[in-house]
Length: 295
Image (cartoon, rainbow, N blue to C red; front, side):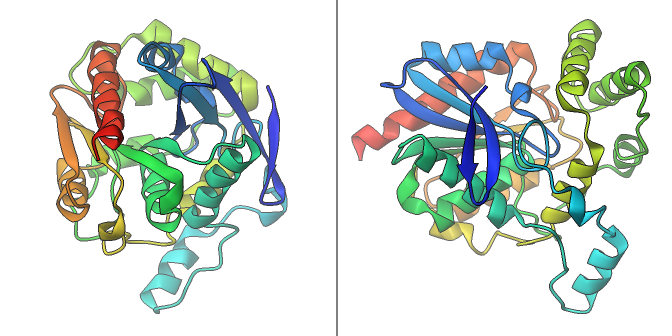
């Protein structure tokens, strides 16, 4: 796969479909590699007239790693915030948003439809208010504004999902598939497919240190809710009703803040992309992308 030189780092990316069609940039969530956007959803997007661009965020997958930065001290970050100080972290979500725009520059794409999931949804929102001229439409999936007043993730899920992960390959695959099943929602979790995904992820690039630094990056800019009211692009917000990480209220807040934003709540969907709802998701993305033609 190709790499783009962006913001003095390298970003690994992949394109799929006809470059003459509508460009859509897919931004993965915390620790997610570009393979987190499955071939199934990419094919559906292509069939709906999109040119798909997906990539590894900095510090995961095959993009540049920030090894020399070490592992961030999350307690120190929290303490700095409590003192009213800006934590000292290797990079921010704003830097990651600039990476995404830099990738568009490298591909000579002036404007694109921007779609992000979870942490990627926060990055997508930041792109939309810091680089508004680059955004045709915005889709935010199972994400949040980082507003601390929103209902927090279920503590029992957080405790299980962020516990130490085995580094040995087979143990990692087993454990991560088990954790994925906890946040999948009410649809039947396909354990075989889940383990295959985690196997591919591990073999492509097992690098937990980058996940820790991305988690630290989510502390800045903190609560973006006051800033997203400036977003003018047609906006779609998609949320699973069974999401144990980011509450439905998070997506409702986004919709109530961004002018004319639309909300799609999906029954049975957790913090996941069940194959049963991929068609519904892609149809909604297509509909919001078509709104630019009617403005």
